[in-house]
Image (cartoon, rainbow over all chains, first blue to last red; front, side, top):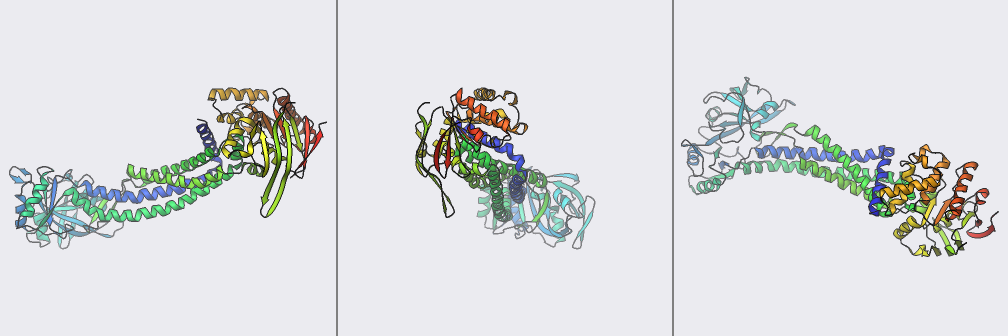
Length: 395
Length: 229
């Protein structure tokens, strides 16, 4: 109890004295804020990218792709193979018809609104069941394209990120002109970065004959994927891999988000080391400015431990303030900020939002606390070991 | 006067300043009886404050022993010394050393945080101490709102609030005008005579020393005794 009283009293004094040391305290606060800001900003990119990629991923939808293909672009399936998939066990049927969408995937060049640079945008030919094999995907403006016509619908994110995709606009890819007739949303998922048209029209426009790249299959239930995999693997006419949609997209997200993390953590660590020095400087100044006070308290009988703890507490408090400041700025400035990047796996642009999530902010605050603890420790030891008689004489 | 409250036996204190060895106190013996009001005088650098710091457990002798109230300070750890100071000794400094962010009342309460008194008891005891030094009406004032004499009274209230047997005063009137200094010295006399406090006061001021019951002169680390005027 006495120790606690002492710690509280000395800490209270430190805090009451803070306004007198506002400049050096701000050095520590701003330093830590910068670390947390950069940490949260960089990693919120990875989080946002992952979230966009995996949000699209349902567990009761399967993607059938040519065996060994690492992306849709590298895959290829014939019409006969698509028919085999449609009749496979585990596929959901609606009025006797399989709920599947055989799809073709090409990349088109469209300029970004932000900097007018050319970007690879996924242009997907889909079947009539395209909306049925995807969760939370729906037209939000205009109408569906008509089969057989050069009409397309655009994802909401693609429309906001790329030029010339306004509803009613005509846009030319190669020699073909397309009319934008609708806009669809996919709950912020990766599909929103795409443009869709009738797969048969796309096959013709890009001279792909009767070939597809993937078949997206709605399963009877989540557990049905095992049966589907088994059936397709054992069919000698097929050489395909089957993934749940979630598994497929999280594998696709891995490369890019790992790259961002590999960039983010070392930058954070380097900046954190800098911030530790900022905190050290600030706390040494604090101990020096409070020398007379500390010596007086020690003369009155306050022990070295409360002085030590209260100094570390002050440093941690400053770091926490910095962490909250940095986290708040990161959240206000970056959370929900829409950008696009090239996905390593699909070679196409994925439009995503920075996601400054609660666990990122928590990690940022923990980083701040560690900086505060390390930055406060040495000055605290100096404060606790202050030679009282000498300090009283010098002051 | 009762038997010795504090005993110094063969006390030497040597400081090392770079390569130079400074003998501040040299084989000094001193008995301070309980209830004494001792003034210690001497030129600057003679070792007066060092002697005071040794008595208060703020410094340790290089050789010899310091015993106060039966406790041998030189054998105590830093933590033990802190605890001992909290209950056995009160300090009064030349520049008061009040904490500027705390009111007079809270400054006086500080040493009581080292006891088991609760907040109400601490406030009551601080109020009594402020009453003894005649500053009850200034309890809520910050140090910067007080005169030098009033600040020193608050410092004295802080020194006596946990009822220590020994008060150690380092030039308590060194920063005050004559009239205020005499008031402070009168207060110390009252604490000595009426409250039974043993007081050791370091001073340059011969007039201040006259308030004590006896005066010792320190010169070149040695003691020389003279009767008080």
